[in-house]
Length: 73
Image (cartoon, rainbow, N blue to C red; front, side, top):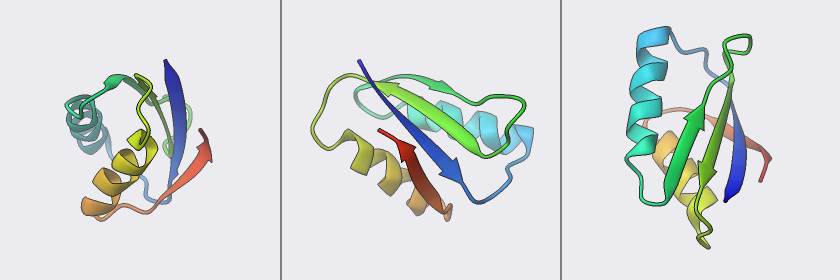
């Protein structure tokens, strides 16, 4: 399993974050999505090894009007 941590410039409310997590979980190869309660900007995504998975995650986030930065991959 691989992990990507993304920093979101936007601060999302709880409802929007729950929806975002649910939608990301629906992407192929995604196994888990974590959002620490103490940091409203970080999102950690665990996924099965797949060549373009980080790019797919970024594309999904940008399609929602968010401005993600990869912190680690």
